[in-house]
Length: 88
Image (tube, rainbow, N blue to C red; front, top):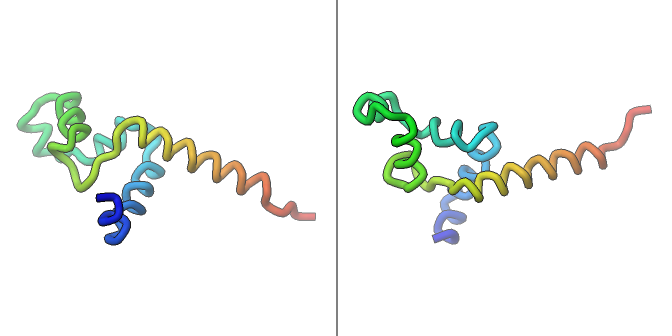
């Protein structure tokens, strides 16, 4: 399935999603519609449904995957800053 996702460009979209949000909860909330909250009346329940893949758009990252991608992105950014040429 990962190969299929790579072929369609979905992997990049998922990785980009991890970088857009500060917390995993914000990531889950971004996939919850106002209609979901209207019917469920419970934000935690809505988050659980997204996390389990019953609701949301496309492939949902698990908490561990989200945190790993955030950490990798932060390390890459720090490395880029350290290796950048300094202005004289």
